[in-house]
Length: 250
Length: 273
Image (cartoon, rainbow over all chains, first blue to last red; front, side):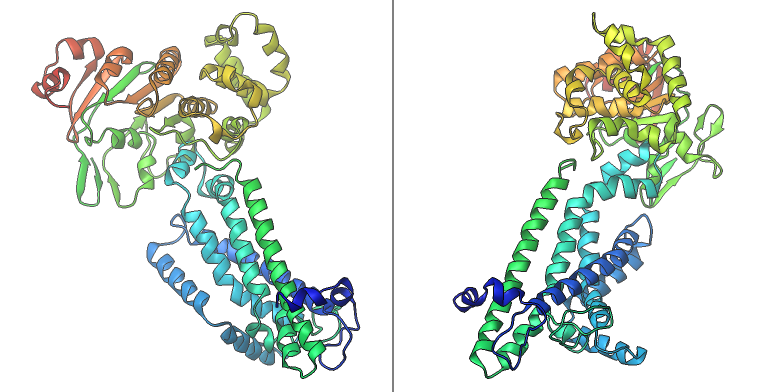
């Protein structure tokens, strides 16, 4: 991949829009897959963050009983470890039941299910690391639970939360099995939530499977691009985390 | 009586804490001093399996009454912990946190500062030549509030150039003074301090003690300390706890010169510590 990928990852190859032919034609790029992957991953991250953050806060001991929190954390840990093909199959059944076709929306739903336990558990762990004396100091001044959670705990946990979100993002963008049945595959860039969408992992999958050597080489380029995206996300996560950790108490 | 689960931590405690004086709660480690302190502003409620029986009255009202206003109580009774924990914000925001959560509006803040100035005018806190500078900040209540309480806590000169720097960058002595300023900013009537100088170097400890002596005319201060000499230095009234029981209490002079109980004598002379 490192040898063959860069050779083909010219601008022309990567960003030629629309005419990205993947299985039969020798020319074409992977712009559809790049855009598709980014749409899927951002959409799923946003949805799982919006759902996951309240759940992570609700797991704290101020809000629910210890027993319930233990059971929930165990369930989420099991869900985190579930193979992604299970999420793909589950998402597919839901789509069939709802009458949806393979689309961006279906992929986002499947990826959200995959990313949710990761998001919740990593944010939960960061919040639990808040020193209890810090919360005590806030309560001692007359803050309510909600005020303490949002004005003190959230600020203290912010760098860790950013890392958690980007961890889930990185996991989601690279996953193939969950979106295999739910997104379909297309040569075009989706114009609505209900269009099928290409993605980088599936691009690699389909391109490697063809007998045409030029197309196979594009697979390596796609894999490299995926790797670069994940690397960029890591770097961005470190920078953001560092920027927001100015005020936190160690 | 206060108990964690089945273990009784405090029992048979009946005492009146005098107004506008420094009361020291002394005793060996593990005798329930901190627990007693935390019952005074209901911080013990945060612990699991805590049971409190009896009454704690502040201004005549029992604070453990189910109908009591907890947030108002904690506004009235400020708390300084042993190791200071600044909030994860700038120095300025740390001080304004209290007034903001209690939704103190402009008028209240100005009234509060004016009230305080009658007793401790900012001129007396300012070193010579700085008085003129303070006058111009009266137009911005929050900035004036921050400056006033930082001066009151003895921290202003050290942080005036970096009010928006993270509070976590301060030294531990400065953090404790910041905690004092933070507690004062909501205009409490009582200040509780749990071994406030034990984590500090001698110079910072001296500064805190000096501030307490300045503040005692306007606030009721209750200090837990295991340093007997500190109690001798600053206390007006002393409460001695031993193994969760109230052994003796009284005005400091009388307590140290002629203790009534055998255990008190042993503690003061250093036989038990």
